[in-house]
Length: 588
Image 1 (cartoon, rainbow, N blue to C red):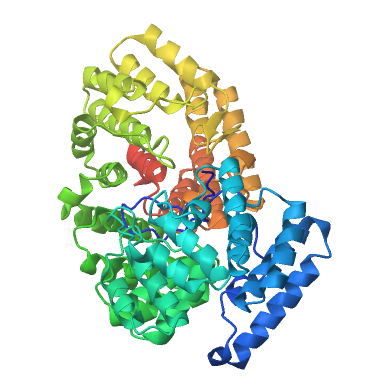
Image 2 (cartoon, rainbow, N blue to C red):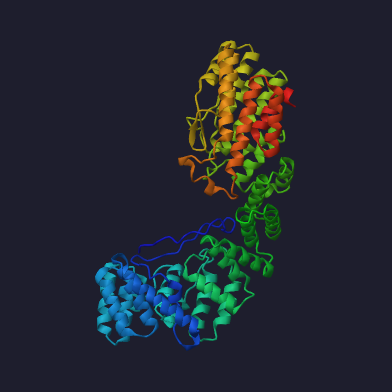
């Protein structure tokens, strides 16, 4: 049975919950431009507004049939509305016209069988169903119409219930869901309750309140409403039970996915007022407050509430830490918070990498090394290079400290280790990545140990490495240009060194004026960020740092010191700025 993935919610999954998906059957074509209106049964109690919506939907579907590309779907939509009106003759005529244009539309074929049965042409209906199973032996609707068991999981039953309900067969839709028994991992139990309540309301049955209560009581984990019809179903639940915090939460998730952000935020606020312990709703509000409302203080308060509601959730700890980092919280404060929750940190590679970074940023590289040696990391999308970066930085910092105290052998060991990539890191260095900083410092350590030939070999490698691979692109200038220029000084070529520093300075000035852009091959990177980044501000900070490097290399220490202070004010977590200051005592 062919399936189509439902559009995934945008950054509002419950912590450590994988994305679910709606199981769709092959052959299900669009049912017209107004599917929600077609879910309204036209009868007196529906009121004038519902009748008007149905009339408008019918007119829109008719207009769609003017276009050849939409004739099959348009006639199918008209047939569904005909069924809502119990106009079986018109429905059959429209289905025949739809199937002449697309004979493999399984939903239209199954609806045709239902209409034929309403017209007491059972033999023809059975023949249509058998022919449909020849096209697709796994088609759930035709098998159900022939009295067989519905194949698949609860998602398939929900799809099938909507197929029935779209044409007004609410009783059959409720029967499809009658014996559904979803597992906890499916995450469909809340939706099952809301579907049953909505269908019961259409049939004037008194069971709707009980179904709504069951939906509210069901565990929310892995529940991801994604079908457009579920907007109407959840809105119906809220109309019947305005205090239903879960329905507001689910509908908010669905609206956020459909980029109806403000409505989603209002629904999440409604949800947390009635259920303050809903950590995911608080988390969603934190994301939306930062990315949509541009209110970082509100985002901070929302994440604080989320962590209070779920203090043992490691993902929430990571996300709050990333928010703090984005807001410029001090490394000392972030480190203190992570150390207070080491058991949670140990559950996640990304948190462990952040802990390493904070150890290095606050001068505790020994602790970073201990963590890197005792953990086996697994690669994850968006984290490429982070573990390896902390490995190199840790050994560089320890090697520089050893060199400063005159222990050249220990420094050489650390710099050699920085070039190596242990297997427990789970990744390798990109072939185009520039390690000039490591070769420069290794050359310095070898020279201090009296090994001048080996030292010159590493200095030459640092001096002659061209370009750098960063953010999915090769760059002519980067932070490594500074170390290449220093290497030329070590090799006795001051003119080459000065030229490189001047070129770096010119590049930094151009970069400061250039519009911020994402490289073509890195366009997916921003979508993996939890909190939207200010690309222009980040580029400006990068330009300031490159200028500081260039001026330091040209002997302009005072301007370099001022620039580095500005960089660290803009970004207290700027690793290279911190390391550059510490490796040059004159900048302290």
